[in-house]
Length: 88
Image (tube, helix red, strand yellow):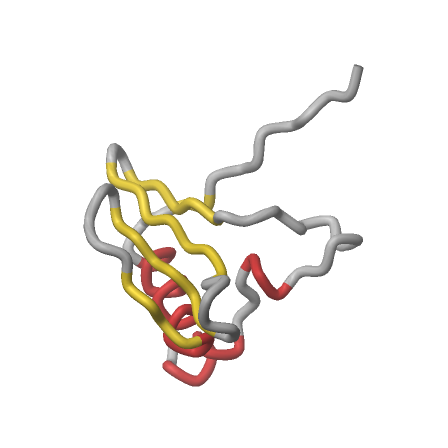
């Protein structure tokens, strides 16, 4: 996929609460035993925190986070489905 298309692709944080594919953060991508966690940076608006397994967190701007998300999908990572919460 050309670089242009990657930057325009939809990522989990583009969805709104009413959308069918909406997921709460953090967004977790898994491949085997490896996982990458992506969440919004509360201290730095417009930035995202990315962490692989237990390694150091990286701070990425929105376009870097979007590109990294699409690269991880290409490398075989899959977005983990959220657990369904039941109300009693």
